[in-house]
Image (cartoon, rainbow, N blue to C red; front, side, top):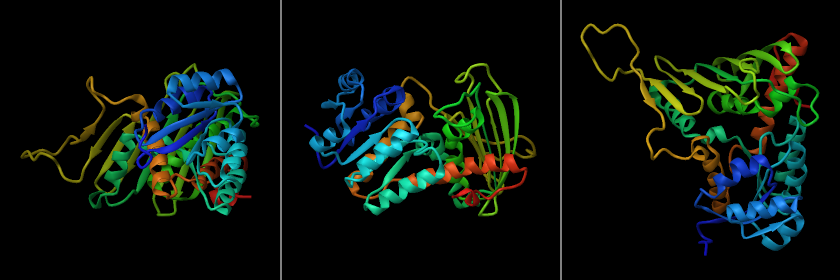
Length: 351
């Protein structure tokens, strides 16, 4: 039997591809939750997920599941429209939710989602799993050290193959900003803080192949650059590349593909007479037969463990629904800047 003092009672709503490929496998690796039930409109999918991941019960009706199981928290995985509607059903009962990114289809709905939770004295978390990936957690610890002297410059790259229209959005480019690069928008806020202004340029080679170049100015005074494109490979999920570079003062680090970290500290780790060239780096990367699971390395396991831990402690989790709205607002500002040809302040895109 689970230890109710150290395991949060959690239910899943949505047993589709992402849920069963990434989120449920990560959930069963977290030792601080009890998977009490799963729910999906498709009974066969719900039954299969319960059997595969060890949920005690399965349902096709979310309200019935909530009535019978009384979970402490619910993980809702689906389209943004589904998460917005079903998430509010859960929040209306005073039960916290974890939803996949983005929490809604636009920042206005995400703001409404956040306000809905607050009005019912509860909270929601958004599954920006990159914050929980070990390489980025190490990077966050490094840039927080006094020796780094703050974030002064940040540049990030995310590239992949062709990106199509999703969720009824008006174009592949808008879909890319909303459904994919919203992760990067949250990541730059995680490291650089709130954005004050951005200026974006867009080039389209064909409808599903395009790129964005974005210059950034943060409220802290730091500056940055984004390279976001769907041009670099033939297939949508082939050849994904993600890179984050951060410069402090006489210190810098790079994270590549969420798995490899390289840090140049202000102090050399070796002193050789006459040494005046070359870069002295500290590195981290997962290696060996005991390397952690991909769910851990990509942050899925620990984001769910964080959600469960916050349920047990009765404190709100982060990143919040408000963080989800801010990430969407950056994407909307990028598109607004492209449309107008002028710099845009993300706060000005709020409706």
